[in-house]
Length: 139
Image 1 (cartoon, rainbow, N blue to C red):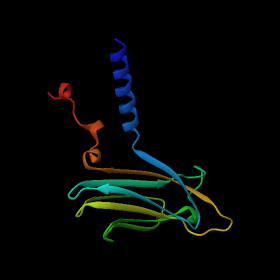
Image 2: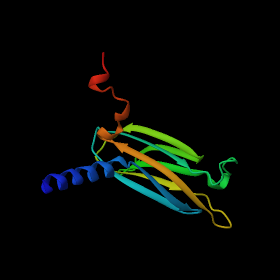
Image 3: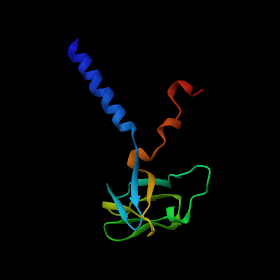
Image 4: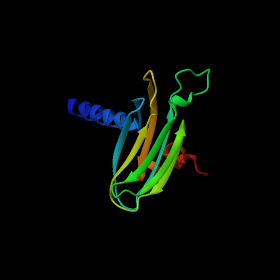
């Protein structure tokens, strides 16, 4: 009985940790942050990002807009955007290896911090499983 309880707890913790799929990070003005993902050849990958507004009642200032690039380990460019507050990308990997998403914040005086929400999914995780019909829902 105790073994069964431990097994259920381990499975529950594993499911909860896999549910977290986005990343939030801070980026100082004038700095760059790159995130790498090892992707297999012919795998679908999708990503979306947005700058978290410091004040919801006002438009995002230009100082908080980013330059974003997604490249392969061979230097091929798969996404590029300049002075944006949000964006998305999708592609099928043509080569296996590390793909990098790099975010640049413009120089600002006094220095500021930009908060970015980033969601990057590859392979089976690109599918929106929450919208797939369940067996009991199909007529």
